[in-house]
Image (cartoon, rainbow, N blue to C red; front, top):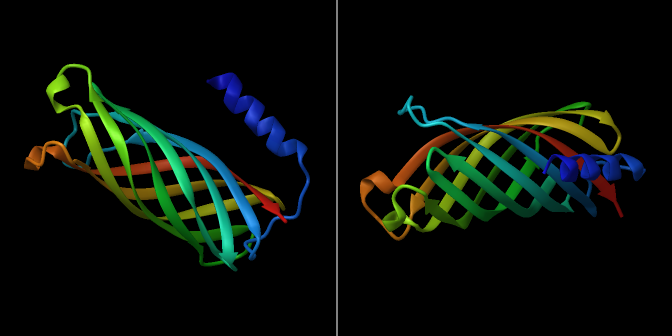
Length: 172
């Protein structure tokens, strides 16, 4: 996995294209960080994600975000559709991102709870553009995850997901 991420970053640095948050720009990114449950100090985990987006209008990206994560004995994999709006267009830029999607849950210790989940995410972020087409970002999202197969109240998770990532922009 580490080699794949390193190769991806090297390839992104190799290409040289103009990047802005303008109509017609593509966005590629990777990121990950720990998952935090504010109401439960016992559970801990991580999340990894990628994103592939397109700017149909200035400052607004629409895309797909495959993700995977692990919290204690539970693993998740899925994808979100996201909207990201850049409030500013400077070296330091603020943005807001929200999305929704589906995924699979697999419990190692409790296979009876394996099933399908839905996810809704929303949060602010900031990024620093250190090249015209490459930036590092920090996103702090609230996520509401729900196990669709088991609608009991214990199957809904309210989580905070701070994410550190890299974004690459390609102007057509």
